[in-house]
Image: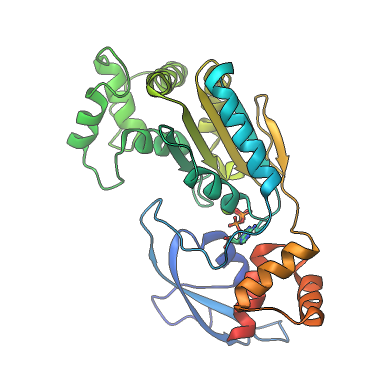
Length: 309
Ligand SMILES: Nc1ncnc2c1ncn2[C@@H]1O[C@H](COP(=O)(O)OP(=O)(O)OP(=O)(O)O)[C@@H](O)[C@H]1O
Ligand SMILES: [Mg+2]
């Protein structure tokens, strides 16, 4: 792959593409022949990093997942009367975890508040990365917001009903990536961050039911994981639904309803492939594609895209 890349360009293969496709604008190049591979491989060129949390257009309408959506909606109904709920959607890469939470979160009844934060594949070693995204998104602070904007957001009463003390403000700014201003020791930092997150979400949930979606927790940085393990159980006292997504290797450290997302079934896969191809599919072709994709929607999209090319 390196040999095929002109100077200053980053070329990636299909595996990397799958991991980073939502984070970068990527151009599909003609397949190339690389060392040690007999068949040409698909190659992609990274153009630029996307803005965080941009809307990703979908290739096909949603098929199936009625049962899983109903489980999430039931949990949402319960938080109105019975305190917090937590769900964890786990499944193989490409099986449709993100799509499921996207469908769920775009159909929230009016009056529901939503905070979404994602872990990145290249950020697993960055302490407080997920926590920082969570705070940013809860405060409506874009990644380009400067320190003054962050200070203003921290002071405007969203985090807490009482003003934050100086040490907490410095710590929050540090967690958000504005320098290393905090003089607190690591244990105190951890304790204060847990407390501030709890206050932030308690305040949010006072105003109305709150849905928090944490995506791709298999990539969570360990510091955020430790914070989350303490904050998540406390959210269960609030009108809050916490939904996590992850690949199967990650397990939540708190009680959660488990939704193990399975590949699409026969009918659903045919419907998806038909949707992707833009019309009814010959059953023999449909079965052949299903055999290749195993009901994984991402693979179905990949195979149909390459068929069309
Ligand atoms: N039920 C579905 N109907 C139609 N398209 C779907 C469905 N599920 C997933 N897709 C599409 O398949 C692709 C892969 O799905 P998605 O990104 O949700 O997978 P994922 O499980 O989140 O994978 P990863 O572990 O890589 O994050 C997306 O383009 C998505 O829109
Ligand atoms: Mg995903």
